[in-house]
Image (cartoon, rainbow, N blue to C red):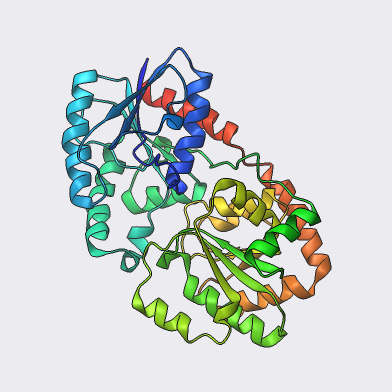
Length: 374
């Protein structure tokens, strides 16, 4: 069997959500199925870490696809031409994008349709590309793997796709996310939060992550409690427009908001486990990997009561209205002042996290691959 996989987002020290899902899933699938030849398709020379075994054959196709116009050239011309030549049994679009009008069977992994519901949050070129092509990708894919039941139902409703065509394949969580000792926590606080307790946000600094309301809620929390808590923001700035910068600069307690930038995985494990609570309140999420990472670390979660987030945390956290600054701030006050609640949610988080595992993700994705080929 020949399996072609889009591994374009496997970039050393630059892996974000989709790249992480690709890495964790296919690292397992490749090693579990040595009888299969996997063609990993990149748009630049791959790092050796991503060639997981001898049954992986790396392929580099041009141009480097980092803009919607280049997406069209890469997916609809370079990739389609290569598939026609190699004739694999299946192509897996790990970012939901596939070549159109191709004779190759395709499995599109769709993470979310945020661009359909909140198009204002994307630059015009990306918004136009996604809204034009994703309905075509969904309709033409042989099968679809969705990362949550919410995303599955959203695809069914938004694009009128038969639900029988869509498999739900939950994301997982790395085994390295675990509770840590008080001594280790103290070391992390010394390095990142001036030795103070901190709320944590992890993710790209993007408008959909609702950071303006989170900043305002934290500011309100500080005003009402007069506590020494910090808010630690871990992630890179993707789109940080002047409006956000202007808003941030006027906050009374902006000096208690700490930006670490991107950190390596070893630091991320420790930072996550050292947080007093995760404050992750996007207005839209297809799954929300940071939620599971925090829960597996025994850290209580404050998250949004919309899209996939209630499905992922169930009763293991506090659900808030992401459009209400007061609601977010009240949850922060509650988790700090009610120590019994903090302890209870820590315990529930550990139990809920057991439902998510990258081994399960790999197994379920492989089942979806086999369904696609049949």
